[in-house]
Image 1 (cartoon, rainbow, N blue to C red):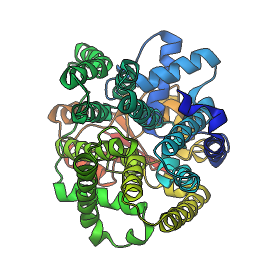
Image 2 (tube, helix red, strand yellow):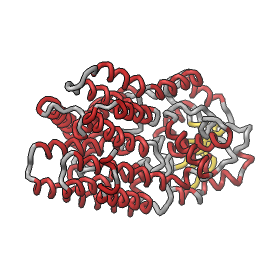
Image 3 (tube, helix red, strand yellow):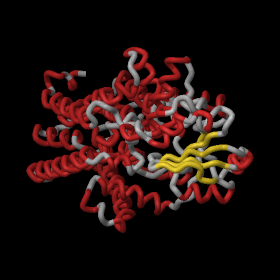
Image 4 (tube, one colour):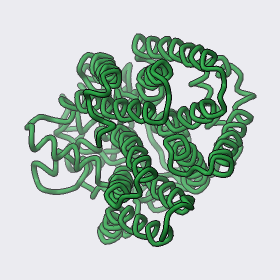
Length: 489
């Protein structure tokens, strides 16, 4: 499309290049690794080495959609390099593409050069996006899908061409097979098409869009069902209240507005006001502006639907937490939805520019703090300190004592993913799920089994060990500065 021609969008190119440099330089060329990163990478490696879609534990990959590990596997096949090696460069490219597309769209939506540049800078410097694009996570591709979907929807709203509708459907399908939350893009597209009252055959187009959008996910779910008997893997039940989840949502939102983060008592109120604001902005675009397919209207609709989807699924299944990673797809649509409302309300351009400049400065300070203090990520389940783990006393002990952890000895760990990376000669099962009687019974009967606890893994709280001791006797056998080896006599 002509609106994305580089010759017409030099400033967008410069902002995209700035985003690329920020990402690839933030971790000095080494991508951030978490438990999920290791799972994705192991699937990509197994696909290239054995032609199988199995994770490091030998089980079929069903907990997440196949799209992201397939992408990593394809790049690994073409470049003959490992995802740990090319991951940060891939993220920098995905981030640059995202920024370029969005800044081009802002220009087409009528924002002047000053506001477009400042808005683009706010997105480049977004602390929420920096956290994600430093990591080997599927959100990196998912958020790009959001941006491209908005571009396709914008083009469809102006031209109503089948090619634009097809592009919307294909991008939504890719998003769905990357994250299950991609269903929110399907809902966004369907509702936007139905809300476009100036076009004919809205219902037919919406149904066609929906059918294409869910096609890849449907095939993925059928495959999961045939292999594992479940659609999305085993999911733990949620036992937390809605107010707790709203509190967590508000906590993340206030991380993007630092002055409020020091007042936890306001978190639920912030989350509630956020949802109410989204409803108001969306209603204004739909009812007053009669607009369902502009960049700003699409952003507000997706933001509301994604928020409600996350809160709804959090009530059904257990999340580690509504953290920055899970909620990062909200940042850009929330920012654009609010910016669009401010732009169309005719607020003084100088005031808007000053507000955007202040947000840029605040974001820059947060980015600098995050880059200079990686322990923030290490302590919040975001990222493993891989450099330190290479010299882990616990893992060094395991590697030097094969007689204690051989194939005839049951081995369990809170971090089997780390053992896959640093102790590849050994296999450990995940810890028994305490709410699963069968899991607990199997562990109780596995006498002589060893349990390896690594402090670097925050997936299980320390209280887990206390609860496990109530079901099965475990004794400390070896203690290290960064972990403990227990035995079940």
